[in-house]
Length: 95
Image (tube, rainbow, N blue to C red; front, side, top):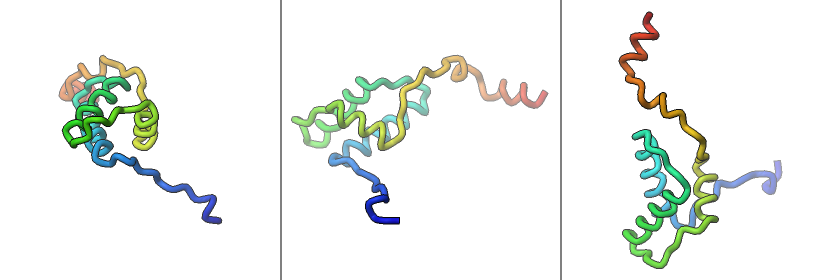
């Protein structure tokens, strides 16, 4: 295989923002809270301000590459699954 056939993992030019945003995203989704693109952009800009990058703006390109880098897709989530208690599911499965 030639070196031109190999793909390389691209990283963000703003690794600190990328890492903080990914951590926030994982925590938010684990709490069953829906997340949208504009919400991600707003949170990314908040992180940039906290990291002393007040002029940084979350572009559509950054957001698209962030989602692609971390394999994030926005799909409709079934709300009923989050409302079921784990104990009830275990009882049902055991029957």
